[in-house]
Image 1 (cartoon, rainbow, N blue to C red):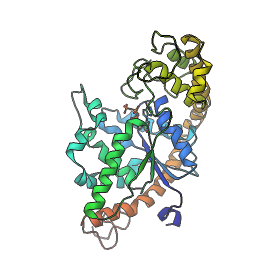
Image 2 (image 1 turned 135 degrees about the vertical axis):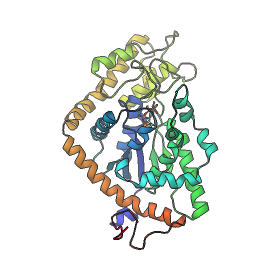
Image 3 (image 1 turned 90 degrees about the horizontal axis):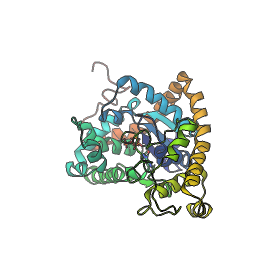
Image 4 (image 1 turned 30 degrees about the vertical axis):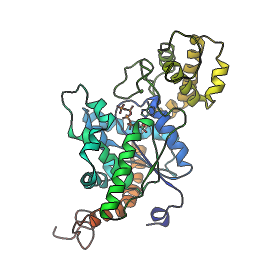
Length: 351
Ligand code: AQP
Protein backbone atom coordinates (compact mmCIF):
# COMPACT_ATOMS: atom_id res chain seq x y z
CA UNK A 1 0.00 0.00 0.00
CA UNK A 2 1.46 3.39 -0.93
CA UNK A 3 1.57 6.41 1.34
CA UNK A 4 -0.87 8.35 -0.81
CA UNK A 5 -3.55 5.74 -0.21
CA UNK A 6 -3.36 5.83 3.57
CA UNK A 7 -2.41 9.46 4.18
CA UNK A 8 -3.75 11.58 1.37
CA UNK A 9 -2.19 14.98 1.35
CA UNK A 10 -4.89 16.26 -0.97
CA UNK A 11 -8.55 16.12 0.09
CA UNK A 12 -10.19 12.82 -0.74
CA UNK A 13 -13.04 13.37 -3.19
CA UNK A 14 -15.80 10.83 -3.81
CA UNK A 15 -18.99 10.91 -5.83
CA UNK A 16 -21.30 8.31 -7.33
CA UNK A 17 -23.56 8.36 -10.35
CA UNK A 18 -26.17 5.83 -11.40
CA UNK A 19 -25.88 3.90 -14.67
CA UNK A 20 -29.58 4.12 -15.38
CA UNK A 21 -31.20 5.92 -18.24
CA UNK A 22 -29.68 8.56 -20.46
CA UNK A 23 -27.73 11.18 -18.56
CA UNK A 24 -29.13 14.69 -18.65
CA UNK A 25 -27.85 18.24 -18.67
CA UNK A 26 -28.81 18.25 -14.96
CA UNK A 27 -26.41 15.37 -14.33
CA UNK A 28 -23.77 17.29 -16.27
CA UNK A 29 -24.24 20.42 -14.21
CA UNK A 30 -24.42 18.88 -10.72
CA UNK A 31 -22.30 15.81 -11.50
CA UNK A 32 -19.88 15.40 -14.43
CA UNK A 33 -18.82 19.05 -14.56
CA UNK A 34 -17.96 19.07 -10.86
CA UNK A 35 -16.13 15.75 -11.06
CA UNK A 36 -13.75 17.20 -13.60
CA UNK A 37 -13.06 20.33 -11.57
CA UNK A 38 -12.57 18.44 -8.30
CA UNK A 39 -10.22 15.87 -9.87
CA UNK A 40 -7.79 18.76 -10.29
CA UNK A 41 -7.70 19.52 -6.58
CA UNK A 42 -8.26 16.22 -4.82
CA UNK A 43 -7.47 12.53 -4.64
CA UNK A 44 -10.62 11.62 -6.51
CA UNK A 45 -12.81 8.51 -6.68
CA UNK A 46 -15.80 8.41 -9.03
CA UNK A 47 -18.09 5.44 -8.74
CA UNK A 48 -20.65 4.07 -11.18
CA UNK A 49 -23.23 3.09 -8.58
CA UNK A 50 -24.80 0.11 -10.31
CA UNK A 51 -26.11 -1.38 -7.05
CA UNK A 52 -28.31 1.70 -6.70
CA UNK A 53 -29.85 1.08 -10.10
CA UNK A 54 -31.73 -2.03 -9.00
CA UNK A 55 -33.86 -0.08 -6.51
CA UNK A 56 -36.38 0.79 -9.23
CA UNK A 57 -37.69 -1.33 -12.08
CA UNK A 58 -34.84 -2.05 -14.53
CA UNK A 59 -33.74 -4.36 -17.32
CA UNK A 60 -30.62 -6.49 -16.58
CA UNK A 61 -29.43 -6.41 -20.21
CA UNK A 62 -29.76 -2.63 -20.28
CA UNK A 63 -27.89 -2.27 -17.00
CA UNK A 64 -24.85 -3.99 -18.51
CA UNK A 65 -24.89 -1.65 -21.50
CA UNK A 66 -25.59 1.52 -19.58
CA UNK A 67 -22.73 0.78 -17.18
CA UNK A 68 -20.33 1.02 -20.13
CA UNK A 69 -22.26 4.00 -21.53
CA UNK A 70 -21.69 5.82 -18.28
CA UNK A 71 -18.01 4.87 -18.08
CA UNK A 72 -17.55 6.32 -21.59
CA UNK A 73 -19.44 9.48 -20.59
CA UNK A 74 -17.32 9.99 -17.48
CA UNK A 75 -14.16 9.93 -19.60
CA UNK A 76 -15.78 11.96 -22.42
CA UNK A 77 -16.66 14.78 -20.02
CA UNK A 78 -13.03 15.02 -18.92
CA UNK A 79 -12.16 12.48 -16.23
CA UNK A 80 -8.61 11.27 -16.62
CA UNK A 81 -7.97 7.66 -15.62
CA UNK A 82 -4.43 8.61 -14.58
CA UNK A 83 -5.64 11.18 -12.08
CA UNK A 84 -9.02 9.85 -10.95
CA UNK A 85 -10.10 6.41 -9.84
CA UNK A 86 -13.16 5.53 -11.91
CA UNK A 87 -14.80 2.24 -10.96
CA UNK A 88 -17.98 0.26 -10.65
CA UNK A 89 -19.63 -0.13 -7.24
CA UNK A 90 -20.47 -3.84 -7.66
CA UNK A 91 -16.79 -4.60 -8.37
CA UNK A 92 -15.93 -3.64 -4.80
CA UNK A 93 -17.94 -5.89 -2.49
CA UNK A 94 -17.18 -3.72 0.55
CA UNK A 95 -19.98 -1.35 -0.60
CA UNK A 96 -22.73 -3.91 -0.07
CA UNK A 97 -21.16 -5.05 3.19
CA UNK A 98 -20.85 -1.48 4.50
CA UNK A 99 -24.51 -0.82 3.73
CA UNK A 100 -25.61 -3.72 5.92
CA UNK A 101 -23.30 -2.78 8.79
CA UNK A 102 -24.36 0.87 8.66
CA UNK A 103 -28.04 -0.09 8.74
CA UNK A 104 -27.42 -0.72 12.46
CA UNK A 105 -26.81 2.99 13.01
CA UNK A 106 -29.36 4.42 10.56
CA UNK A 107 -32.76 5.43 11.83
CA UNK A 108 -35.88 4.16 10.14
CA UNK A 109 -37.54 7.52 10.82
CA UNK A 110 -34.83 9.49 9.01
CA UNK A 111 -35.03 7.18 5.97
CA UNK A 112 -38.77 7.80 5.82
CA UNK A 113 -38.18 11.56 5.60
CA UNK A 114 -36.07 11.35 2.42
CA UNK A 115 -37.86 13.38 -0.24
CA UNK A 116 -36.34 11.34 -3.06
CA UNK A 117 -37.88 8.19 -1.58
CA UNK A 118 -41.27 9.86 -1.33
CA UNK A 119 -41.09 11.20 -4.90
CA UNK A 120 -39.94 7.94 -6.43
CA UNK A 121 -42.31 5.75 -4.40
CA UNK A 122 -45.36 7.86 -5.24
CA UNK A 123 -47.84 6.18 -7.52
CA UNK A 124 -45.85 2.95 -7.90
CA UNK A 125 -47.52 -0.44 -7.46
CA UNK A 126 -44.31 -1.99 -6.24
CA UNK A 127 -41.91 -0.06 -4.02
CA UNK A 128 -38.74 -2.04 -3.30
CA UNK A 129 -37.18 -2.14 0.15
CA UNK A 130 -33.98 -1.09 -1.65
CA UNK A 131 -35.52 2.23 -2.65
CA UNK A 132 -36.10 2.90 1.05
CA UNK A 133 -32.63 1.79 2.23
CA UNK A 134 -30.76 3.33 -0.73
CA UNK A 135 -29.35 6.23 1.34
CA UNK A 136 -27.54 3.74 3.62
CA UNK A 137 -25.77 2.26 0.62
CA UNK A 138 -24.89 5.78 -0.46
CA UNK A 139 -23.55 6.58 3.01
CA UNK A 140 -21.34 3.49 2.83
CA UNK A 141 -20.10 4.46 -0.65
CA UNK A 142 -18.85 7.76 0.68
CA UNK A 143 -17.60 6.70 4.11
CA UNK A 144 -15.58 3.70 2.91
CA UNK A 145 -13.12 6.06 1.23
CA UNK A 146 -12.62 8.37 4.23
CA UNK A 147 -13.99 11.11 2.02
CA UNK A 148 -13.52 14.81 2.68
CA UNK A 149 -15.51 16.24 -0.22
CA UNK A 150 -18.56 15.02 -2.14
CA UNK A 151 -19.35 16.94 -5.36
CA UNK A 152 -23.11 16.61 -5.95
CA UNK A 153 -26.21 18.47 -7.06
CA UNK A 154 -28.76 20.01 -4.67
CA UNK A 155 -31.06 16.97 -4.89
CA UNK A 156 -28.47 14.90 -3.01
CA UNK A 157 -28.05 17.35 -0.11
CA UNK A 158 -30.46 15.46 2.14
CA UNK A 159 -28.79 12.11 1.43
CA UNK A 160 -25.38 13.58 2.24
CA UNK A 161 -26.77 14.94 5.51
CA UNK A 162 -27.89 11.41 6.35
CA UNK A 163 -24.42 10.05 5.52
CA UNK A 164 -22.90 12.61 7.90
CA UNK A 165 -25.36 11.63 10.66
CA UNK A 166 -24.59 7.95 10.12
CA UNK A 167 -20.83 8.60 10.31
CA UNK A 168 -21.21 10.56 13.53
CA UNK A 169 -23.48 7.95 15.10
CA UNK A 170 -21.07 5.14 14.20
CA UNK A 171 -18.06 7.10 15.49
CA UNK A 172 -19.89 7.83 18.73
CA UNK A 173 -21.11 4.27 19.24
CA UNK A 174 -18.05 2.28 18.08
CA UNK A 175 -15.13 4.72 18.19
CA UNK A 176 -13.68 7.13 15.62
CA UNK A 177 -13.75 5.28 12.31
CA UNK A 178 -14.96 7.68 9.60
CA UNK A 179 -14.17 11.15 8.39
CA UNK A 180 -17.35 13.21 8.29
CA UNK A 181 -17.66 14.39 4.67
CA UNK A 182 -18.75 17.78 3.36
CA UNK A 183 -20.66 18.53 0.15
CA UNK A 184 -19.45 20.54 -2.85
CA UNK A 185 -22.42 22.15 -4.61
CA UNK A 186 -22.21 24.28 -7.73
CA UNK A 187 -22.93 27.97 -7.21
CA UNK A 188 -24.92 28.02 -10.42
CA UNK A 189 -26.70 24.99 -11.86
CA UNK A 190 -26.98 22.97 -8.66
CA UNK A 191 -30.56 22.19 -9.61
CA UNK A 192 -31.32 22.32 -13.34
CA UNK A 193 -35.07 22.28 -13.88
CA UNK A 194 -37.26 20.43 -16.38
CA UNK A 195 -37.73 22.51 -19.56
CA UNK A 196 -41.45 21.74 -19.69
CA UNK A 197 -42.14 21.90 -15.94
CA UNK A 198 -39.60 24.37 -14.58
CA UNK A 199 -40.72 23.93 -10.99
CA UNK A 200 -39.52 20.32 -11.08
CA UNK A 201 -35.93 19.15 -11.42
CA UNK A 202 -34.71 17.79 -14.75
CA UNK A 203 -34.70 14.08 -13.98
CA UNK A 204 -33.43 10.96 -15.69
CA UNK A 205 -36.44 8.92 -14.65
CA UNK A 206 -39.25 11.42 -14.05
CA UNK A 207 -38.86 14.02 -16.85
CA UNK A 208 -40.60 13.74 -20.21
CA UNK A 209 -38.59 13.45 -23.44
CA UNK A 210 -39.12 17.17 -24.15
CA UNK A 211 -38.47 18.23 -20.58
CA UNK A 212 -34.96 16.81 -20.35
CA UNK A 213 -31.88 17.50 -22.49
CA UNK A 214 -29.81 14.34 -22.84
CA UNK A 215 -26.05 14.53 -23.27
CA UNK A 216 -26.29 12.43 -26.42
CA UNK A 217 -29.16 14.42 -28.02
CA UNK A 218 -28.53 15.60 -31.59
CA UNK A 219 -27.84 19.34 -32.13
CA UNK A 220 -31.23 19.77 -33.82
CA UNK A 221 -32.99 17.87 -31.07
CA UNK A 222 -31.39 20.18 -28.50
CA UNK A 223 -32.37 23.34 -30.42
CA UNK A 224 -35.99 22.14 -30.66
CA UNK A 225 -36.19 21.38 -26.95
CA UNK A 226 -35.03 24.87 -26.03
CA UNK A 227 -37.33 26.52 -28.57
CA UNK A 228 -40.30 24.81 -26.92
CA UNK A 229 -39.12 25.42 -23.32
CA UNK A 230 -41.88 26.73 -21.05
CA UNK A 231 -41.39 30.38 -20.00
CA UNK A 232 -43.89 33.07 -18.95
CA UNK A 233 -45.86 35.82 -20.64
CA UNK A 234 -43.89 38.77 -19.27
CA UNK A 235 -41.16 38.80 -21.95
CA UNK A 236 -38.40 40.03 -19.68
CA UNK A 237 -35.13 38.11 -19.40
CA UNK A 238 -34.61 38.43 -15.66
CA UNK A 239 -33.30 36.04 -13.00
CA UNK A 240 -35.98 35.39 -10.39
CA UNK A 241 -36.44 31.66 -9.72
CA UNK A 242 -39.64 32.12 -7.67
CA UNK A 243 -41.49 34.42 -10.05
CA UNK A 244 -39.86 33.32 -13.32
CA UNK A 245 -38.73 29.69 -12.95
CA UNK A 246 -38.55 28.96 -16.70
CA UNK A 247 -36.44 31.97 -17.67
CA UNK A 248 -34.26 31.67 -14.56
CA UNK A 249 -33.56 28.04 -15.41
CA UNK A 250 -32.56 29.00 -18.96
CA UNK A 251 -30.24 31.71 -17.59
CA UNK A 252 -28.60 29.15 -15.30
CA UNK A 253 -28.22 26.68 -18.14
CA UNK A 254 -26.60 29.27 -20.40
CA UNK A 255 -24.30 30.34 -17.57
CA UNK A 256 -23.24 26.71 -17.04
CA UNK A 257 -22.68 26.24 -20.78
CA UNK A 258 -20.70 29.45 -21.38
CA UNK A 259 -19.28 30.24 -17.90
CA UNK A 260 -20.68 33.78 -18.27
CA UNK A 261 -22.20 35.28 -15.09
CA UNK A 262 -26.00 35.46 -15.01
CA UNK A 263 -25.97 39.26 -14.55
CA UNK A 264 -24.02 39.59 -17.78
CA UNK A 265 -26.51 37.40 -19.65
CA UNK A 266 -29.43 39.45 -18.24
CA UNK A 267 -27.80 42.59 -19.61
CA UNK A 268 -27.04 41.05 -22.99
CA UNK A 269 -30.60 39.79 -23.53
CA UNK A 270 -32.42 42.68 -21.83
CA UNK A 271 -33.88 43.92 -25.13
CA UNK A 272 -34.24 40.58 -26.88
CA UNK A 273 -37.50 38.71 -27.15
CA UNK A 274 -37.80 35.28 -25.56
CA UNK A 275 -37.44 33.62 -28.98
CA UNK A 276 -33.95 35.07 -29.56
CA UNK A 277 -32.92 34.26 -25.99
CA UNK A 278 -34.14 30.66 -26.18
CA UNK A 279 -32.30 30.13 -29.47
CA UNK A 280 -29.10 31.48 -27.93
CA UNK A 281 -29.42 29.18 -24.92
CA UNK A 282 -30.00 26.20 -27.23
CA UNK A 283 -26.95 27.13 -29.31
CA UNK A 284 -24.74 27.46 -26.23
CA UNK A 285 -25.77 23.96 -25.13
CA UNK A 286 -25.13 22.56 -28.62
CA UNK A 287 -21.62 24.05 -28.44
CA UNK A 288 -21.05 22.59 -25.00
CA UNK A 289 -22.31 19.10 -25.83
CA UNK A 290 -21.04 18.54 -29.39
CA UNK A 291 -17.40 17.78 -28.46
CA UNK A 292 -18.59 15.68 -25.51
CA UNK A 293 -20.85 13.61 -27.76
CA UNK A 294 -18.09 13.10 -30.32
CA UNK A 295 -15.63 12.00 -27.68
CA UNK A 296 -18.29 9.76 -26.11
CA UNK A 297 -18.96 8.00 -29.45
CA UNK A 298 -15.24 7.26 -29.91
CA UNK A 299 -14.73 6.00 -26.35
CA UNK A 300 -17.93 3.93 -26.29
CA UNK A 301 -16.80 2.04 -29.41
CA UNK A 302 -13.89 0.47 -27.52
CA UNK A 303 -15.56 -1.71 -24.88
CA UNK A 304 -12.43 -3.65 -24.11
CA UNK A 305 -10.57 -0.48 -23.14
CA UNK A 306 -13.50 0.68 -20.98
CA UNK A 307 -13.52 -2.68 -19.19
CA UNK A 308 -9.78 -2.44 -18.69
CA UNK A 309 -10.00 1.04 -17.19
CA UNK A 310 -12.80 -0.06 -14.86
CA UNK A 311 -10.67 -3.05 -13.80
CA UNK A 312 -7.76 -0.77 -12.90
CA UNK A 313 -10.10 1.54 -10.98
CA UNK A 314 -11.71 -1.34 -9.07
CA UNK A 315 -8.37 -2.66 -7.94
CA UNK A 316 -7.34 0.68 -6.51
CA UNK A 317 -10.78 1.22 -4.93
CA UNK A 318 -10.66 -2.20 -3.26
CA UNK A 319 -7.27 -1.45 -1.71
CA UNK A 320 -8.44 1.89 -0.38
CA UNK A 321 -11.80 0.61 0.97
CA UNK A 322 -10.33 -2.48 2.62
CA UNK A 323 -8.91 -0.92 5.82
CA UNK A 324 -12.20 0.89 6.46
CA UNK A 325 -14.43 -2.15 6.08
CA UNK A 326 -12.05 -4.16 8.25
CA UNK A 327 -12.12 -1.46 10.93
CA UNK A 328 -15.93 -1.45 10.79
CA UNK A 329 -16.16 -5.22 11.35
CA UNK A 330 -13.56 -5.07 14.06
CA UNK A 331 -15.08 -2.18 16.01
CA UNK A 332 -18.55 -3.64 15.74
CA UNK A 333 -17.29 -6.76 17.49
CA UNK A 334 -17.20 -9.31 14.70
CA UNK A 335 -14.72 -12.14 15.22
CA UNK A 336 -12.46 -11.99 12.19
CA UNK A 337 -10.32 -14.86 10.92
CA UNK A 338 -6.75 -14.55 12.18
CA UNK A 339 -5.28 -14.67 8.69
CA UNK A 340 -7.47 -11.88 7.36
CA UNK A 341 -10.95 -11.72 5.99
CA UNK A 342 -12.99 -14.89 6.06
CA UNK A 343 -14.06 -14.71 2.47
CA UNK A 344 -11.39 -12.41 1.04
CA UNK A 345 -8.16 -13.18 -0.73
CA UNK A 346 -6.58 -14.35 2.52
CA UNK A 347 -9.33 -16.88 3.23
CA UNK A 348 -7.86 -19.60 5.42
CA UNK A 349 -7.73 -23.15 4.03
CA UNK A 350 -10.66 -25.33 4.86
CA UNK A 351 -13.23 -22.57 5.24
N1 AQP B 1 -31.48 18.43 -12.33
C1 AQP B 1 -30.27 18.36 -11.77
N2 AQP B 1 -29.54 19.48 -11.57
C2 AQP B 1 -28.29 19.41 -11.03
N3 AQP B 1 -27.71 18.23 -10.65
C3 AQP B 1 -28.41 17.10 -10.84
N4 AQP B 1 -28.12 15.81 -10.61
C4 AQP B 1 -29.16 15.04 -11.01
N5 AQP B 1 -30.15 15.81 -11.50
C5 AQP B 1 -29.71 17.11 -11.41
C6 AQP B 1 -26.87 15.34 -10.04
O1 AQP B 1 -26.32 14.37 -10.90
C7 AQP B 1 -25.51 13.49 -10.12
C8 AQP B 1 -25.81 12.05 -10.48
O2 AQP B 1 -27.16 11.77 -10.16
P1 AQP B 1 -27.76 10.34 -9.95
O3 AQP B 1 -26.75 9.33 -9.77
O4 AQP B 1 -28.86 10.49 -8.97
O5 AQP B 1 -28.28 10.04 -11.35
P2 AQP B 1 -29.70 9.78 -11.76
O6 AQP B 1 -30.50 9.19 -10.64
O7 AQP B 1 -29.61 9.07 -13.03
O8 AQP B 1 -30.12 11.27 -12.01
P3 AQP B 1 -31.44 11.96 -11.74
O9 AQP B 1 -31.74 12.77 -12.91
O10 AQP B 1 -31.31 12.61 -10.40
O11 AQP B 1 -32.49 10.80 -11.72
P4 AQP B 1 -33.70 10.64 -10.80
O12 AQP B 1 -34.45 11.94 -10.79
O13 AQP B 1 -34.42 9.53 -11.41
O14 AQP B 1 -33.13 10.29 -9.46
C9 AQP B 1 -25.81 13.78 -8.66
O15 AQP B 1 -24.75 14.51 -8.09
C10 AQP B 1 -27.06 14.62 -8.72
O16 AQP B 1 -27.12 15.54 -7.66
